[in-house]
Length: 173
Image 1: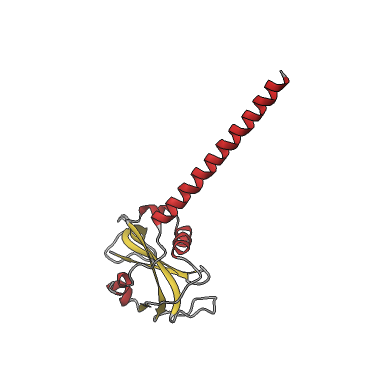
Image 2: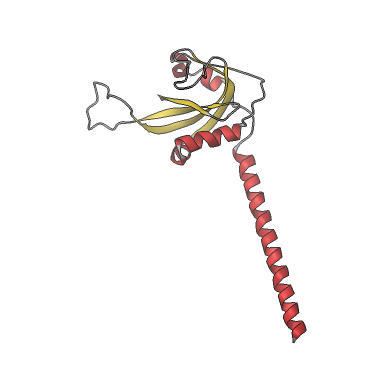
């Protein structure tokens, strides 16, 4: 009887160990697959921003760089998603991340900071085709009953070396 109890105890321990190992292996495989299929670590083409008339019209510039950033593309996207929220990320038709040296010619100094956005290393993460709420005064041709949303590309600027949020801007489609 004692041998049977010991044998059952050992069998239960072995089965629990096998189950834990299988679950852990399955979880690590799933997260590795998700990470590798969602994000590659290379920058999207810079032309997506430089050829956009709204980007250029607001005095914004971005130049290609071969500089190695401390922040990866996936970390920049995760940070931008945390800032803007999962709803924006889910709503986006696509998410791009462009690595480059960024210049804001209209307002280069970030308020309450020593950062000057002149050839500054950044990731610009863009949530394409999202619906945003209007901010500020309504245009004269709109009354308060008008739908106050618009379809836009929402751009989030992430410091290429610290992952600090530097700002965001959006323009309608």
